[in-house]
Image (cartoon, rainbow over all chains, first blue to last red; front, side):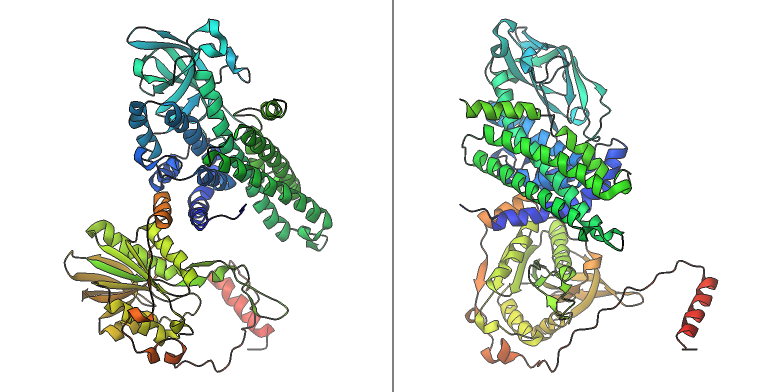
Length: 379
Length: 261
């Protein structure tokens, strides 16, 4: 068993860290404050190959590993959680299902432009009445001979207003429950498809989270993704992979808050000494550092299993559960260590605390992760 | 156009801390990096590659672990990488280093040789000019801008302390480059993967270069360390944001305070 990074991974980490520090960090406050989608940085990430890391070279990707992809989301989220989730949703929720379930034609048509970052991807499962109970899908897809007609709406869709390609779930046969759900590839310009209202969010405010509206939306026959009636399965498999991305994002947020707090507590003086010299600070920070490192090992282990094509569903759930709760704890305490300053927007920790909360909610709440873990435990 | 860029692996001196008790450098855990001026030089070469399709070779002399910066250079876009490594090179001062590098460069077809101005560990700024001397090649140091006519003429901006000169030089030539003038590009993901999975680094030992062994390594190094000492740490200066008039008063009062005037 080897816990060390390879030289290749170390060099990759150096590259993504340099980019995150030089290009992403300086914009993070503005992205949050102005709810600005960081399109320039997304384009730059595309040019460097970060929008398609685990995609095979023959489909325009980089031929990298899920481990490298996870490290990229972590390092980006360490300075800007919005940028982290943009890469995560794009890679795990849009490219991955097309790569894993798409026909050769679908892969050739969509993946190269997504992997190069020319196109941005998104994923639509959640509906107003179908959150954790995803089987309650009300969006329908009707076979109209030469095409599918979609009607309904999706909410809370990351990247929505900036995306070109969407993987969307819709009910093709209500009588069959989850086995009546199918997946479709929808393009931005399809007739009857539009973007609805943008959500005003607590955190990850630049991620362009919007509603998707389908009004007799015409989807070509060949854009059914996977087999008819396999949509729910595809969605669940996709979310298993997505959880590695969100776990990496949560880990990055936690690490970012640690970075800020170590720096601040060494500089901030009270009662004649740096607050880092107080044992309360040291003991609490030691506990937090231990949890962050434990989260990192869970994330790396889940990524490793995915790379090795081993079952990783429960591993991804554990990684996301623990990393998300660690991110929430670390950021909350980071604000506390910063005192009054931590509560202001002069310091980034209040943003990190707001950003951390979503990692306990999306791509399966922490409760759902516990269900997945318990499901395996009591199988 | 064939370009060779000489690069060096150095400790990241911005990360070095001084042990307050002993006054010595704490080297443990200090990361090794590509010397910043050399990285600027690589960027110049890669820009010429983008514009004119130049072929870029990187070479470094150092221990086996120096291959890390060669992989980094390939991940940025260099086409070929050579590691000059041999126990016979150990202990080299700038003269022995430039002898070894010049020996290697004689065996590499080139129109242009680029080095950094100086390395952040030694700060000598001697190796580039010495290479030019060994190869009897014209050299321009402190380069902050490079233009190429596509054939054999370079127009070069050479920075001085109080301005700059525009110079022309025919290839082959040696340029020593300032990091401040050329922001290096990022590595690409594909470049990193290929640098490790598909590309080879050529290992050259002393046998591969035609240089008298007496001119290499410690034997070839006339430099002797007479004495070494640690500079006392300077206390951070005070910064005053004042008008010129206030500044005069401030300076006068400070000088009086110290009984200088």
